[in-house]
Image (cartoon, rainbow, N blue to C red):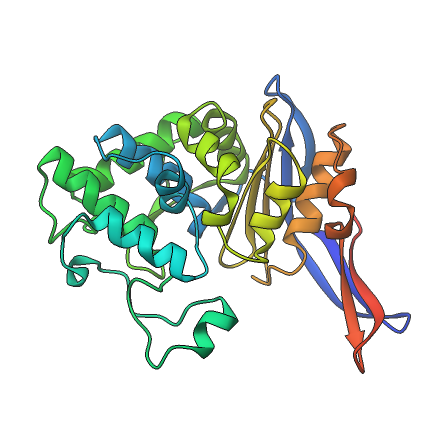
Length: 299
């Protein structure tokens, strides 16, 4: 059964509760933390991006450094992100990107724009990397999002190999790409495998391209040396250390506000030092511009 993971307090009153599941694996592969229904399948949503980036790399896409990081990330649409996406396209028309037009998540950037665009969408780095993989492997570019496309079949095989599980369901993510359901435990196992790949090296080396200015994933990676952090829609988060600890979180109500604190608490419970990210272990609740409570982990 799902468990109570976090509660929201306001002026001493418990206002909301977040239920879900969290699993943490020790570097040995043994389970260090297990709370809730960790064997139930989840849709990783954007936590799938590092595995999609690894598949693109395997297909021959010329990805390295910031380009590999943005392929594995959910960027905030800043100009530096757009410039890199355009480089990844390598002259291909923007219209080949099948992610929907979107406003950038970076508020300062958004204020300067007059209309949404595909390259500002937080998944455009992944989509540009997928197109680069198709060009490198001489696969069709027009149909790169079809689940039957060679690239998407490679992504599924990559996920299954790293997780040690068979995909139990294929869905379509918000950006239009296939997303594959597996257990929360399997997702953590996949992250353990990922930390030994160039994708994790790029994410750790260039966290500003995994998220952006002030983005929680970027901040956590800047605070914790060697840690990879990637969130996904509907309350999913994965964390992994260079030593091999791995954490996967799913909050059932889909709200992400507690996921980072939950994930860091799980890492700490396994003996990993998270003291340099202590401000991320809870989230302040404001009233009249003042802190009057917090979102705190309770498992």
